Length: 152
Image (cartoon, rainbow, N blue to C red; front, side, top):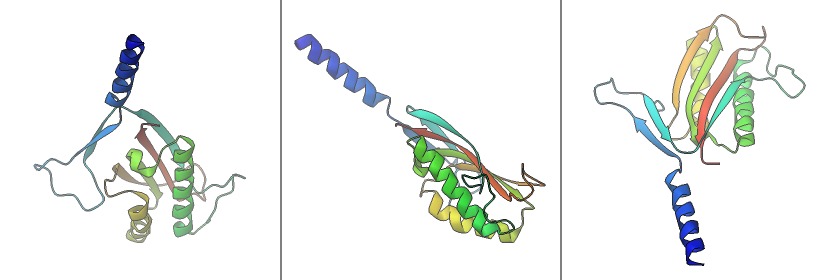
């Protein structure tokens, strides 16, 4: 019985040792970042989840919000959350996102930021924003992919 308890204790200790840990890295030698941005994240433990590009397409493969960037951002983030949830992850588990916007301009950037502030936590993932000429469908204006690290 004592051996079983010892093995069980070691197993529990080992499991907690591998719990997810994220270190947010913003070197002082770099220019100060705007609120909502992080230079790098070092993640250990947990499980890595790679999220494919999400867009504003619904379950019937129809583009939601044709010509309406605001509607497309909302639906894209909703789809992204749905995929995260299916992987037992939440937005706080994100360590990297890439955002692709067709014909990027200041108005689209303002709309994106309006929704991103509620999408990411106070510890935002590393992110890259890329203006592109086109995406896979002529009606799609935004696509977001990412990487999450979760203990689930």
